[in-house]
Image (cartoon, rainbow, N blue to C red; front, side, top):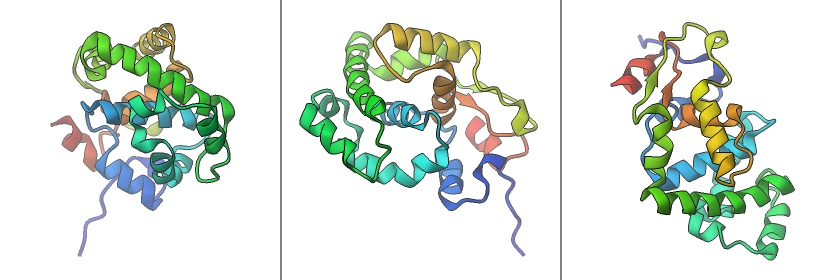
Length: 191
């Protein structure tokens, strides 16, 4: 007899969401390329579901040169047109253009702070904020930390980094542990 694991309700039993939840969501990220991937994907998620992004994630990785910021910062109009014609990704002109702007801004911060990781974790004083949510309704869409992050990223030239997007990014990158306390991942991620 197998025991059914309790997960956060947002997975909805969907396979990709469940795999992402069980292996990535809320795990602290300290790799700059992974940070950049999450920033770009969270920007593309604006107005859409994360499930939509997960379905297209591999297409995004291929189309966006595996999210290497140095490559994306050099994209020209021909590459932007190619991306606009790529049916495997979200074809939003502003979001595609923002990926280039964000790559350039990312590289500036990376240079200034030695790593983007060092820059971004300052918004949580270098550690994961461990929350104690009982229901999905308890989880906020934004916090003072995501407000501060959004304001600073915008000041540094980033696009599609409103506070709600920043909070989703913080959840993805493990800057906050928003697994429900009954979720089997809550304690695993907290360790």
